Length: 308
Image (cartoon, rainbow, N blue to C red; front, side, top):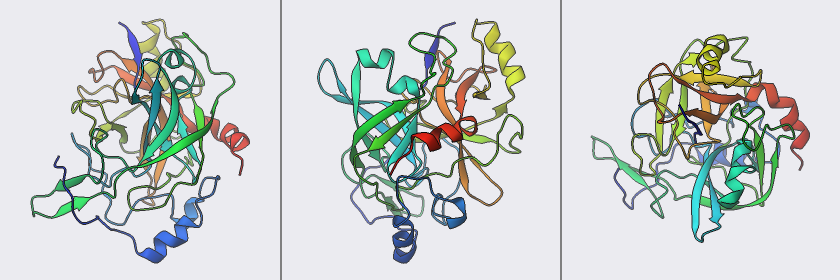
C-alpha cells in the first residue's frame, strides 16, 4: 500500500470576541520570537473554547493552526502544507513541507493565520442553531523570512521520514487575537507518559475536502504496536515519531502535512504533541494509524534554531 505525506456558512457579521482587550494586549506583548511560557496562560485558547470533534470545526477552534501558501512552478499560489504557530515569529511544520519533493512543485512564500475556509476571502462565519453568527476577522497572511528543516531529516525519498520537522520564520510578528494564538509546546513525552485521553488533529482536507477547517479525534497508538503495522510495509519508525488514529474516516489527509496533533492537558492548556508526517492512502483507514513527528523529542533543537 502506498504511503503519502498527510498533509458553513459564509457571511459578514459581528466578530466572535472572547477575551478582554486587556488580556489580549497583555498576551500580544509576549508575542516575541520565543515560545510563550504556559504559566502566562497566553499559549492557549479563549474561555469559551471547546475541544469538540466533528466534521467541521468551530470558527475559533485551534487558533494556532496555520496554512502555508506556495508559489507554484506552474504558476499561481496554493496551500500545500499546514503548520502550527508556536510564537510570534515561528511556525512549526514538517521538513517535507520545505525540502524534498515539494521543491519540484513550489516554494513556501507566506503563512496564513486565523483561517477557517481557505477558498473564501474575508471573515468566515458559522451560524449556530440559536441563530447567533460567529465570525472570524479574516485570515492574516505573513511572508516567510526563512525555513529551517532538521539537518538530519531523512530525505528526499526515505519512506520512514525520520526527523520530519522544520521551523518557518515569519517576516513580522503575528498578531494575538481570538483567532490567532500560539500553542503551548509539550511538557511530556507521549511515548513514555501516554496521554490519558484522545488527541485531536486539524484537517482542511479530510471528509470536507473543500478547504474548511475540521477537527478529528484520534486515539494514541503506542509505537510498539505501530511498528508492527508499518514494518509490514517496510517502514521503520524511530524514537522521534509517534502514531495516532486507526479510526475509519478520522485522520489528517494529503495536504495536511506539517499540521498539528494536539492534546488538552489537565490544566486546560492545549499542547502540541505531534506534526503530521505521513499515513495511509487513502487516509482515514481502520486499524491503520498515521505517523507524526514527536515534538517533545525535538524541543532542544527548536530552542537552538529560534533567534530574536
